Length: 360
Image 1 (tube, rainbow, N blue to C red):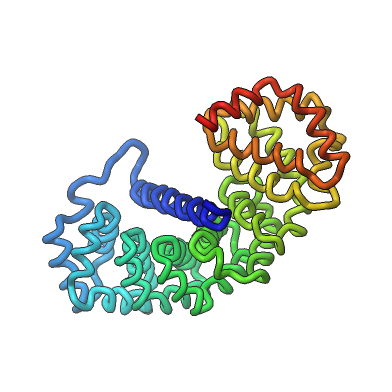
Image 2: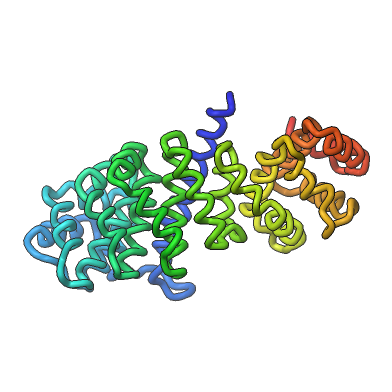
């Protein structure tokens, strides 16, 4: 498997995981702690079809809309039943452009939950509702903007064709503008949508957009959480982004030093930090490598402890990332860097064990 295939596979798996997590978040969003959705908070398939036929004639009540939202998030078969009613999406679009904010928001939530369906369902929704959802990214209503961004993210992550269509409609351009300037409350949904665009459109996103994406994450200070730093980790494989990303290398290494000692460990963040470091280390000046070996904040003993912990990390993919990073340091064009890692290797007691564990 070549590098491009590896990246594609990792992006595909990341998309599946993030969308699965978002489905769970949506299922839990309106629940009190420890509660489950009661039967009277959602509908059977027959009731969904009946209510969808009613929706074609006029907007549902807010209570019914909430039940429809809950029903759509429960099962893809419920989404299939909703879409089987002719004119169902047209009815949602009508309400998505309603003059009543409550109806507008309710319809947007339904779109968001449909967008968590399968590839075919995502493509169908995007075909008809995509332009309206992209337009809602310009709304002044924070609640509507937030759910629209989540929906766009779900669509982009669920279907390559949906991403291509939304990208052509200026979706990413709007998201990047929001990434720079949106309210802090909205930021997680924007980062989610940007991540899904990157996952599905890694090869389609141009260099200027990639650099703007990395600058947006950095300027908003979002690289100290797993969502933001994962975007930067993905972008670190693009040569055009590396100069920008090198500006935060010291902060990322500081973060790694802290997180490796926390319990429970933030595996996603640690993985992203390692990927970011490993991709940037080969730059020819030695600047990136010096963040590790010639950092005034840390002694060589601190670096030794860090790598030994990473080499024994419970998740095998973190051990692989660590070995990859060490390999990039070992093969560095700067002799000073290469020698520094050669001096370090005999002090890494867990190195042989890590190599054996990833080759079994």
